Length: 196
Image (cartoon, rainbow, N blue to C red):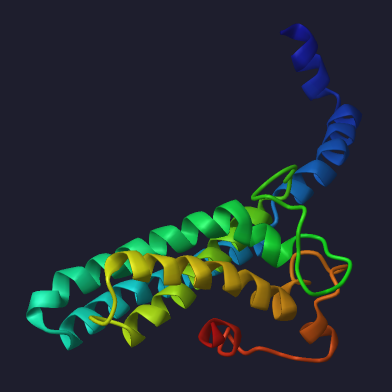
């Protein structure tokens, strides 16, 4: 205890301690980094709320006898799309690639030390779910559940591949995403999400 008081009393030591802690504390507290996480998660929440809007729109536009079936399909397709995006889609969309056609070698979150990857995953996952749900509005009341689940599975696997073409270099700048390399710019997913 006395040594701590002596250490605190010594002005030169306090300055050395302040200088030694300045760099680690400055790198640990990055307001812009926190703002990026918060903004991206807020945007992901807004896109996720679109699921509820799709559900209500489709259930309202279908016959009352089919409203529950349509609502269940909307809920199930997001669950399937999110699970498939976690298992294989994120790797297909943002994994390393040599050709620029498809990503790979990155299953979910192996060896991830950057917390930004998790935020980025959530943001991309809600878009994968939205891409799968767009199909449900087109075929509401026209398919049986097992056929719809097959369609959702296929669209959930096609979306990461087409997404890689335009956005594959967002997480890893070395990825040669061929549409991005050709100068293609997709505004807010309007082409990639709606083309699946």
